[in-house]
Length: 434
Ligand SMILES: NC(=O)c1ccc[n+]([C@@H]2O[C@H](COP(=O)([O-])OP(=O)(O)OC[C@H]3O[C@@H](n4cnc5c(N)ncnc54)[C@H](O)[C@@H]3O)[C@@H](O)[C@H]2O)c1
Ligand SMILES: O=P(O)(O)OC[C@@H](O)[C@@H](O)[C@H](O)[C@H](O)CO
Image (tube, rainbow, N blue to C red):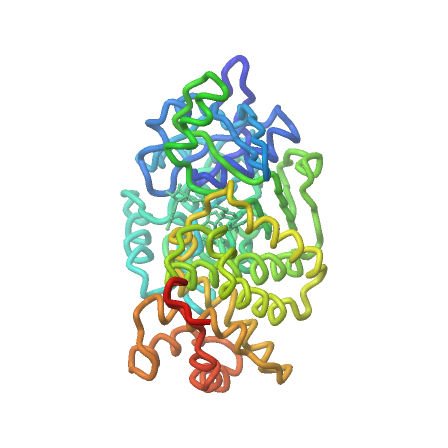
């Protein structure tokens, strides 16, 4: 694929064309090196290809500050495809000029079980193994990526970097595990080729980006004078930390503020625990208390107090926690970014396992009070309608701790008072008697 006369040639493929990709990776790429074009595919929806902005990929990014909007014309997304065009990913990745494939396909998109290997209980694993063997329609995210990497192997285009940007612990290693798991089922030689030719980069990608609303579309059209069906509204803050090799080159993303590090784990711990863990508390507790967005939830004194207690507990051993928390207080409070609590609460069980259970484990190991972190779990149980002391609660907690070290002690601790007492008041504020 080549760019049109005034657009850059495609050197990056992306899977999971959503708001975040357009607010983050496209932004970093355009600001670093306008000679790198991106072709992006939706993971599941067929809609992106139908939006006028997506037809030529040009759209407006709104960097929404506390009192001003800055409008940026984004041109580095050269092509956008719906999931119905996913077969084109093969052609793209088979081209030598394409050096990087980025991914934003959500946590559950990785198809992994609690032990970090391909989840044999996931029906998508079975259907995609069959589809890879029969060359028929694939339904997951790792499936099409593996088929595309197979096309690169056949074309002899050489090594490439895979760069996942989801909020997943060790995301590079995780997507590697998913691809190796699938590859070993369909082609004996493919795992070795993956080992020798594909670099899996760990990343921490941060920029709070809400789903685009009709109001956003109207605002952008009025401000720019250009109709745009697919603008993206995001915060001014943006961070990208990357650890890994880029054997076929990459844009100089550091030029736009990205950091290349030897070990992304301290950054990952800071972001997943302080930002995403607190988001979960606010989302689950906030929905119970009748709120809709993060700014509403953090303005609720009862939730604010629980969040501050959570942060104090979660910040143990987190580098630069105080500076990060100072920023988060301001970022969460912005009522100009209407970040939906429902969106954040999606797939909460998987997210709790990764972001909150390890904090509880560490607090227990330090003989510290696990309650401030365990309350996120109690909010989840209340949100999902699981009553205290029932067999459903037992089953839910069993699933949450499965595979974690000191599983039994952790499970015992979670059944004790931490989950239920002092019981936070999850009722809507109007009924709050505090
Ligand atoms: N929005 C943010 O603030 C933000 C910030 C940091 C990281 N992220 C990461 O990016 C991901 C996407 O966020 P978004 O705001 O772009 O969401 P979005 O709903 O706008 O887009 C999600 C994209 O992923 C695809 N997708 C969803 N589930 C999938 C699955 N199971 N398999 C394959 N593809 C799938 C969708 O089709 C769509 O293309 C998040 O799950 C998160 O891991 C988001
Ligand atoms: O679906 P999640 O939980 O991975 O993410 C929901 C939000 O917490 C997330 O989108 C944050 O806004 C983002 O991680 C900020 O960089």
